[in-house]
Length: 117
Image (cartoon, rainbow, N blue to C red; front, side, top):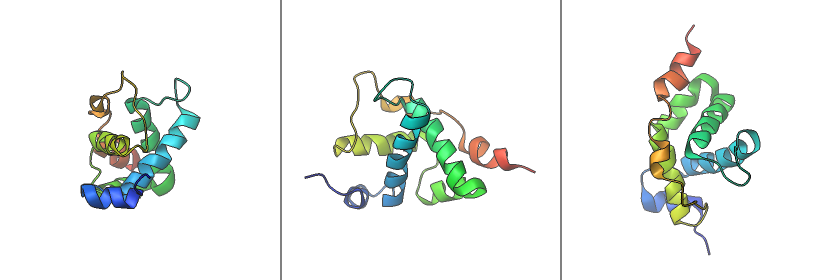
């Protein structure tokens, strides 16, 4: 039986259960809106989908919410994805790598500068 996301988050200690749930929700959101292949979302596509979802959900507070969950860079999305892969919540293809999540965009530019007046 799979562990619950809350259990995984507590055991791992890096990210809150809210962070894991957000990334999992974002995967479904991205698959519907931006997947380039059926049944597969790339790391870059997922990062962009998570950016859009965060802005839709929290607007100018998106970076604050993500930072509170200890998500400070797109690599953190990858760390969460690979944590969920380890616990069989997600699957990975041979062409996928955690490095696909490195520096996809700058958080300050994506979540703060976008809302400058």
